[in-house]
Length: 233
Image (cartoon, rainbow, N blue to C red; front, side, top):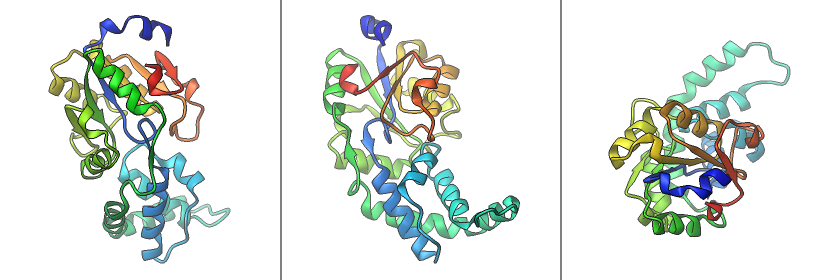
């Protein structure tokens, strides 16, 4: 992290991820998913399993949860389970949206140091955007509920562009919206999705050590630095 910290004059802006980076939303995911599963007459899924599914958008999260609860122990018919999950997806998505919008932010909390970190970045003159794979209709109310929306000039969800992170397109489009060059725009995230997108877009990238990285150690990801808190930026 030293090279990033010692030369922040090289940045004009920062793009900040939401889930696992600014807000611990695992409780929201668990509550909405398990209410959805109850509506479908399916078993519940534990938060520890949900944590490994987070980060690739709500569609992936819902499909992964369906596959998880519909796969019998020792089952070999993976294709059959995938097909069954896909057949239920539209109904599951409708119920998930209903429940998530009802509880959005109620089972989540802003990580320590986030507000102070964002204040410090703004004080240094950096323009800020929030870029998440969460749907925009979920992301904006969550930022508002947690008092974070005022930090960001732009907020883009996973449905804002044709592709989601780890594709570089969302980062390139966000840089375009900010009017900044990727090489002068710092990506701040919590997972390999953020890092891979940043690398492909040409953005420097720093990852927090406390978020959701699909169950893998975050320090094994190719990034320019790691911080234990956004205030360390």
